[in-house]
Length: 289
Image: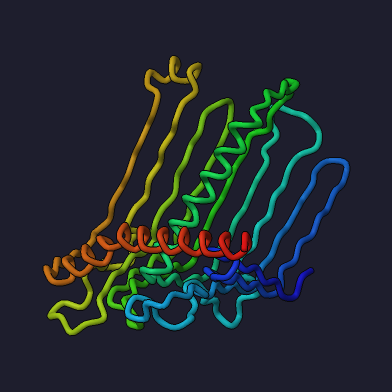
């Protein structure tokens, strides 16, 4: 059990990027002769923007970009349960259950651009290391259990932020996905219970996307067959989707704002990349001297 956990991610040794804070992280493991049950629980999580840049017009003050929005009577923000059978059998089913309560994500352009650049730089490092350590491991054949993954999300909110104000908000609620892996076949199904989007300015229409009534907005099923099963079924992939009633209002000014919001990401990435390279060069020169 960990009461508080802090993780700092820096863009450079002297420049921050994000700080991750977790409250009450716990786990449990139960093992008997038939099965193993592992649990992981997290009560709260916050990600704080610690990006520093002299361009004050582009960057605002330090703030949260992701935080939990759980209700008072809810014990955990995230609960993960994994159950696996220990006795080999073709009828075994390993189950992974992942439950999320409420999360709110604020998209601040400079921070998102910095995170994208950080992710690209990190992936290049891992790709280079993987190329140098290509080792083929021969694995013994064994009976693979059927795998079932259930993922549920009660509420997820995304806000688009410019400077210190949120001009567009989208909320998804009652999201469920089920993944089943068996005999080389992959089946994915689920639904989206609710979706809404609105803007924070005084336009004529405030709700740009809404769902009349209480029906689910989307229900879907996707099956990717193995080569053996494809011969029997007569096709490689099966896809089915049912969409409920959705009301969409197109506001030209809002669409232009959203387009402009995302169009500057590449420019911001280039600025941050140049600033990072310049900082590393200056640190290297100082070390050499």
